[in-house]
Length: 294
Image 1 (cartoon, rainbow, N blue to C red):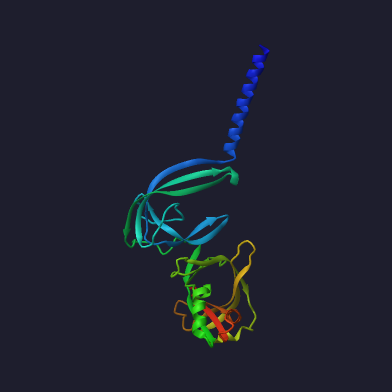
Image 2 (image 1 turned 90 degrees about the vertical axis):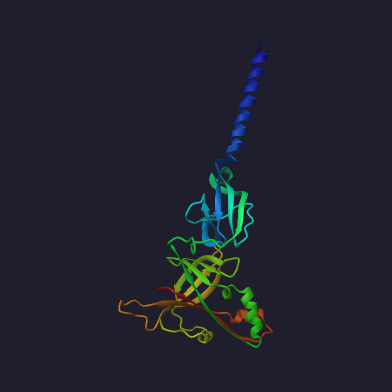
């Protein structure tokens, strides 16, 4: 009798241990907290937006979608297994699964996955916004200028145009505090050339490179600054430093007293070009961006 009781207690203990072990395994794994399916209209081109990853915001091209035939376009960052081709408007069905991942410190994450392509039509989507940026960010067109003085000017120009982000940038995005930036190129499928933090410091140095004179300033210089574009957000390694001139434009003050101002960014690339193209006889390479701020 005692043997049977001991055996029963042992079995109960083993079942209890197994149950606790399984429960603990579930808590240490991934748990689905929500699942739903719905349809999306996906626009024929992607639009500039922002994604949040590992504690930082990043400027990226995102899908413009309408959920369940809604009226307004909204941003959508990624859809698994979706082979998107620009120039086509899609009607698709997707799943949305929300997980609680205990291995990531109870971090909740959501996964979007393609279930079916209902239709794919060659069509330019209408009513798309210019971007999905919040009011905390401004997208500013950049007028690009450059001068190359070299024996093999055409070759240097061609290679810089194809390889240097400074020769590809068409637009800047800044937050209102001018502490974050993105360099964009509308003509490149990789819209974001670089993004990160921006450090602005007052620059009282009048000893600027002579090459800057090759692209003359127009207007009255109100201030000079040094802009350091920090590409690596972990080490804060400077990816690029440019001299900035805040310029008040001539004849821009009207009856209201408003004055138009520009930021003129300059960077001397002479040394870089001489080292990159030693046989080209490079004498000077300078680039400049004009960004209107009001």
